[in-house]
Length: 384
Image (cartoon, rainbow, N blue to C red):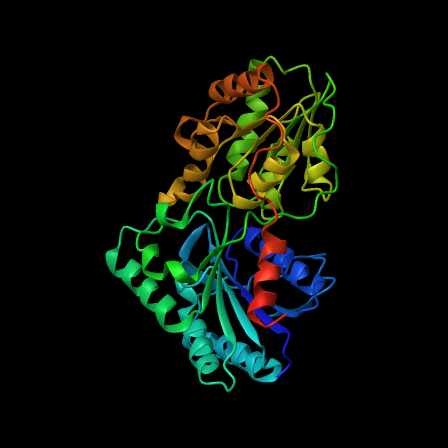
């Protein structure tokens, strides 16, 4: 067994934020001398930069139309027993070949319960290994609330039975795990807060925002309902005091091409639509105001840039994570908030105008070194 080898499993079903967060952590671990094998079970991401890690692509799985209970393969076919057996065997073969000193599983058992068909066999086989690898759960700071007591109890049992540590990628001064996962006190000794995980900045702090800065509207990965936000932004422009500024709309990689074309046909002079850009952090730092959803990675970018922000959290299908995060940011005076059910051209224009009237919030006192702290903790647990 290679003493410093890490098997890091991540399964994303819709947006790619889970993968990027895992990749930032994996690179930070590589930077302290750990050999990281990042195992991805989601759809391949064209042009993904995996420099510094060993990347393994499992036969991919995604969800249909934002329904996380409806899993399909890359050909849009429902998962059947032979497919799940194949995936399980792929993962177990990697475990046997790599013989890692540590296994990090992103989200599970707090999320990704749909993947139990392969993750429970992985955990069981790892526990029987000699020597046994250190087993770690890697979770974001705010979890989707569960109204099912049995599910909460099962999660607590899995943590107790299989996991040595739980990395919570957040700042306890911003939010603690107990606020969105009742029962976390049952494994308090395993919880380690790392700070928020962010990509090392491409720009240094907050730059001078010129008077003609643009309105930057972004839709994250471009999944469920992102086209609605972009469409409302187009209509909001003429209602806003920012109508004479340039407006840039960024469509994520998961936005269907036909939806992109529909949005493009509605553009007017002064409004541009383009795919996500690699210099997003630089655009944020220089914009007059940002309009976005409230996903983990997007909010980290907003906080690092210190820009004025309007946030429209995704809350359809009973989703609570983004709304919780956005409301907390609002109470801290860091954003203007438009809740999903209140989104209209009028409400968005008013929020943009309010953000522009206020001074930029600047860089908040929130720990953004989660990748580095995660790497340091894992290295310590392996005797580094």
